[in-house]
Length: 291
Image 1 (cartoon, rainbow, N blue to C red):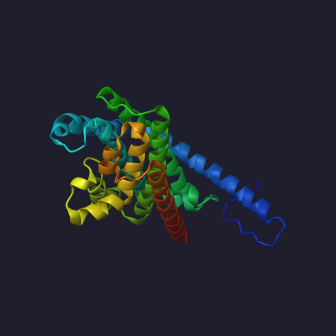
Image 2 (image 1 turned 90 degrees about the vertical axis):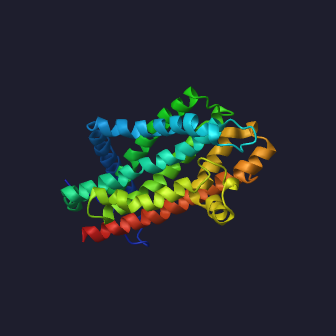
Image 3 (image 1 turned 135 degrees about the vertical axis):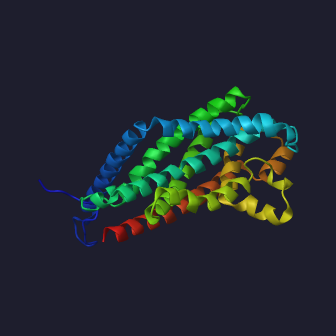
């Protein structure tokens, strides 16, 4: 039985090149699905990891809603929990995406990646399958987070905006997962993934519009906090969720006066850019490891 690989060489001027490229794409998708299935089965055999990933966002919602929420002012009459949930959602997908890097580093350390190198499979399927499985895990965590939010008073303007915001957040999580995947393929141990990513993710999360309006921050920090990708995605999700419930004064304070369409386009641009850059770097890194 002959075996095909997505790395099969084709010539651009050959009549069969387009068909070969299509076959290669199909095989790459099949390889990715196989790796995603393996990663999901492995995750189901570690229920404690799933539980810990779900408990963290619930604790953050309760902490900021009932401990810090009463002390945070300046939202021009907007219910703080409606402001809070989009920020917690982005924080959740950012932190949960770290599982991608941790799991890949674990596979590297145990020699699983070395065994995959000898197989005629698409190179992108190794980290693509990992990212796909973790995106499904993120979707489940997002549902739990929203359920917790509804329990403590979160009320979106409409269901359509909420669904669009959730899709936007999952796309962003997928792109960020590729960044974690690159780190997982580069470090020597799973523990090193946390050490490498924490100094990056922590300031991006807390120096953002996740928990307080950027307008309340010092001037030297405000520019960075406004335009960095985490704030852009949070504001886009928040604008979709708030909809017509936010007054012009609230939109000026919370979203810098930007319209929903502009914020969504900016967040998609950041997501696409992050995904393309880290996707290409992951493929290049794995090719070097395969030599």
